Amino acid sequence: MQKLQAFFTIFLLSVFLIIGPQLGISWANEFDQQDLEYYMKFVHDATEFPLEEHYDYIIVGGGTVGCPLAATLSTQYSVLLLERGSTPHAKSEVLQQENVLKNVLEADIDGNSPAQAFTSEEGVPNVRGRILGGGTMINAGFYSRGDEEFYINSGIEWDLDLVKKSYEWVEETIVFKPPVGTWQSSVRQALLEVGQGPNNGFTFDHIIGAKIGGSIFDEVGRRHGAVELLNKATSKNIQVAIHATVERVIFSSISDLSASGVIYSDSMGRLHRALLKPEGEVILSAGALGSPQLLLLSGVGPQPYLSSLNISVIKHHPSVGQFLADNPRVDVTIIPPFLVENSGLATAGITKDYYIEAISGSIPFDSAFNYILFPDPSPPVSLPVLTLFFKLAKPLSTGSLHLASPTDVRIPPRVSFNYFSNPEDMHKCVAGVKNLVKLMNSDAMGKYKEGRGGAREFKFVGRSLPENKTDDAAFETFCRKMLTTMCHYHGGCLAGKVVDQRFRVFGIDALRVIDGSTFTSSPGTNPQATLMMIGRYVGLKMQEERMTMQCSLT
Image 1 (cartoon, rainbow, N blue to C red):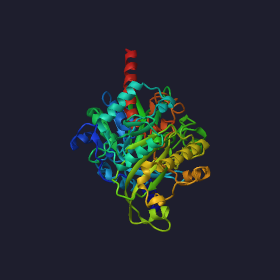
Image 2: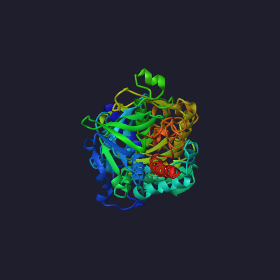
Image 3: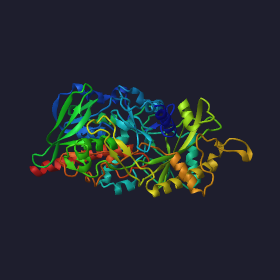
Image 4: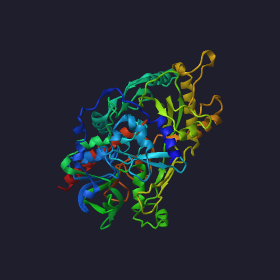
């Protein structure tokens, strides 16, 4: 457990650490506390739900996609949203920006923490959301729209005008402009100095060059996640069950194979049956781990694999659990020679192959942290630090997901991402780290060096950047030794292989998968904006489909 906590300390040092409130301009609507938690009127513990009930739409996963999707569908139809975790109302610590580090450091596997820990087969620790609002309630809050290549290669049929309107529907409620302090300004200046421009200013759009993105933290450091999009729901048409663990999807084969509902358990262990009304659908929005895991447990997946686990095969689907990917990330961290204010994610340097982002803050060093970064000697108790990190944009390396238990959905699946198994990914990582060297050697970064005259140099925390720019082997070693994650994993139910252009599972009626498991790549610098957009977008498209179908029958 010490090793896991130490990893997350390092992880959040370069991604999630944001100490103290941000000061910024709000683009979102103003709400008082009661308005922000209006959704709690229709949120109840699963123990309070009937053992059997019928709905138009049953959505599994009250996360980044599930919340806006449920809110949208509820304007015309009855919706049941099932979430295995608790609410931000009960876990209010997730709402405060200064608690981001604490929330993830306290991630466990079997408990009820908002962040659930898991470790890939490669030994890289990671987290997934386990709270209403999903990953938007535990992340660093950076908001940036998807890139054009994502839409072109996604395998999804897009109405780009509706895409834009769906982003705006999210942004008008929960997105803000972050502050740009000393470190963020220096990084932006360095990006422009080394030719990674132009300066695109403040924008939500994904544009090559340097920019300031959005944030879901407001001017007083309060988080506004996907859960608040439930405030836009039609309350009489929606029910949200928390502490509801979906065990499997129920199928009917009276005519064609079709989903007919789900079985979920409450915290007392009682089983509930949520069933579909005529023309209704089951929608899996449980994420890149949860959705393929649930399909496999329900008998939808590779037939030989399911048979080997004595799982009854409902539908042979060879690509379920396959083509899982994660974006490798490596960092460089220094100790500044003067006091620098804390800053969250604000500046982004965008290229075709990789992204550069930055944070600054102060962090306490416990013994486990010391052992990993500084085996001898140990550092002081607390250090102010500045971090630049590199994220590979579109890794070609893919892995897979396998069940750790053929019967228990509570046991996290085994996940392998096969980082750098495709040589092109390593080639791009080397190029990205060399760009970090250029940034650190820029005039804009000179003031962060210590010493006098020609002896001035950076005081690195942990491994320093390779000095010989021509030694690719040293850069490859740096990429492997410093490998970590942004938690932007995706795949497992790819569009074109498991679902069609409208997220419908091939060969099974009334069943869709709508989340990051359908992605061939992670959209933009950070995927949460696109995921929330998709919840709204697909909800509108489903309403349109159903209306068209009803008109054709009259």
